[in-house]
Image (tube, rainbow, N blue to C red; front, side, top):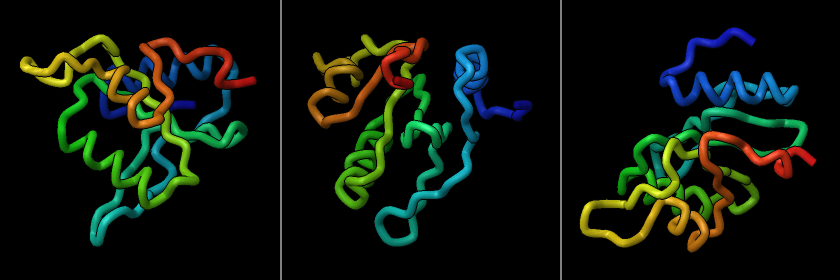
Length: 119
């Protein structure tokens, strides 16, 4: 699948999914949340019914948005793939990206998606 990705991390994820033989769509849906806002997830893995959102930096606005989406659309399964899941939320925070995900009930991985997600 030839796509023009918005980042190298997205390109790497697309290539990884293709290598794994996992069919996906790139940015196919807009998910509304809060009046006038929409979220455009990176990858839709229709066969397994979830989205993969790639993240280099996980900013406070991103975290707030994803909490709102989960609250307003609990049926939507969004999973994160971080370039560095051990990155701290900020210089002053002890919380790492992966810890935020676990606290807020999101599945996550590093650059390599676990095969278990596709079984």
